[in-house]
Image (cartoon, rainbow, N blue to C red; front, side, top):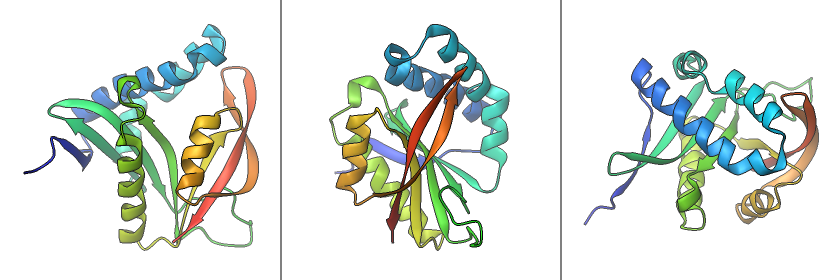
Length: 178
């Protein structure tokens, strides 16, 4: 018997972009709204999750969206970037690196194993793309996410800033070799 949960690569269409914009904004908001000002959240969400922005990201050949569906409902997704220079020594090339730019799960699905399923699928995609490492940034104050990534073998290799509206925050850069 097959699972009702399916993880698929998103189609590169305007309709898919509109769905990703809505679900991405909602999941980001659910995750971070209590820790950031409404003004900063609104500014970031408008810049990062508009349908035109999502369509441009979907159509970028170095970007892959993995979307988790339960029946027809999107319950999580991961945004992957091929050839990422995140945390990379400037003298090296990013050809064999994949970055997990976003990995979000709907609030009702946190703790069900959906995040782990998306992570396993992202790592599988990295291997299929010939990547030798997976990297990501995680907010230093997001302890739950940091512990999640640690369980998958990610290790801190650096830090960088991440801006939400006018608030400059510190992200930890994590790496997992493949």
